[in-house]
Amino acid sequence: MSLPWSEPVRLGQLLGPLRRRLQPDEDARRRIARALGIDALPELSAEVEVALWLDGAHVEGRWQATVVQTCGVTLEPFDTALSGAFSVRALPPGSPHAPAEAAGGVELELSAEDPPDLLAEGAVDLAGYVVEHLALEIDPYPRKPGAEFEPPPKERESSPFDVLQRLKDRT
Image (cartoon, rainbow, N blue to C red; front, side, top):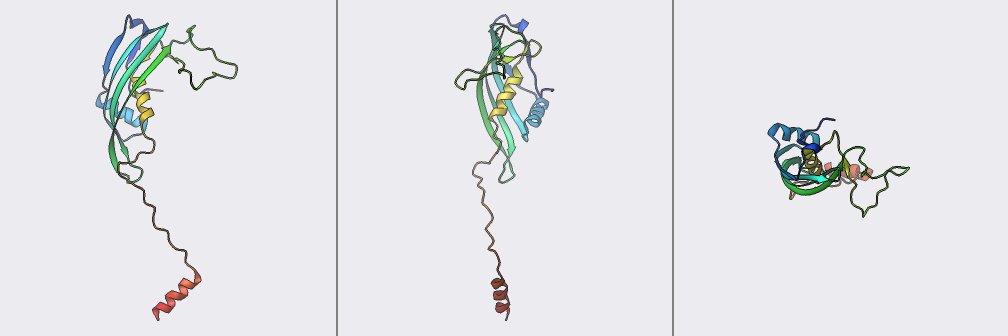
């Protein structure tokens, strides 16, 4: 699967914490919007720090974005400002620190921390984490502020007596 925006950092490049300000260009924002199923993404920026953690990496970031979606009630486009923060740990495939899988799959405890992600090709994709966390914040049922659904008035069922009443009214 090709990613709409990628900013990889190889684990071998990390000698200490690395800070990056990420801001996709217009073409990348268009690809991200298409991938996330939104109308447009006029703004997206993030401050991300990646540091070594065990034999992998720890990534922390803060991001902000403006997304344009179509209102599910009025069918008009509208802007929404979103922001968020994330903290993710990642390990290379085959790491001795990776969680062991149980016989039926990985057992997760709801109160436990998230298990580390597995890195692809020994690189951490900083932009990939930003897009992933942006996707989690987008409302799947967008509604423009102030828009309210008003159901159409119920039509009264006609009866044979209604037909007779209309005939009587004509005469």
